[in-house]
Length: 187
Image (cartoon, rainbow, N blue to C red; front, side, top):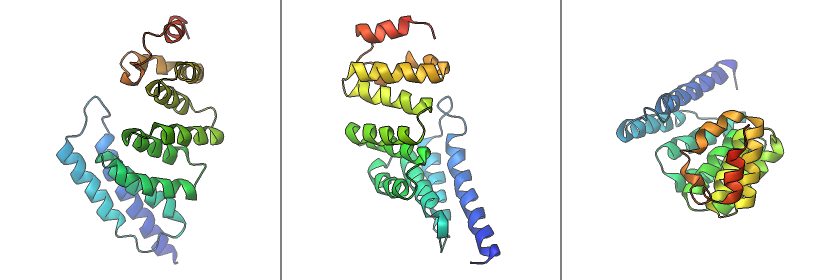
């Protein structure tokens, strides 16, 4: 493959990433309207279709395709793409976070938890992994593990404390004494 072809492939990838970034640029405070979101995600998918030879970028392309589907809330369709990307790049935590997100929404907490525990092997000091595991274990009804992972997340990044009050994933354990005790401890 020539340098020109590699550069062109990189440009196409950046273009697709740009469409996906536009969907989430304002975060939860100003979410993209579903019709605009889906239009941008479809545009990202069409852009990725222009890549003829993925070369060493197959995992990134699969990840971006999975992200586009995830953003359109087509979680079941996103899972195989993200799973394949994770198999190619098992140390890529971003891929595993997206995959776990989809598993959760497909009502497969067991696989979401397994995926994030595998991600912890690659990056044990990533607070988001501990926080999400706390959420998933809370939903699964395991207070002890939820509180343990939440404590680790707060130890790694105290800013996560600001999310807890509005995090619906903690509703199943919010009034449990262990959870209340952790919330009473200042971090």
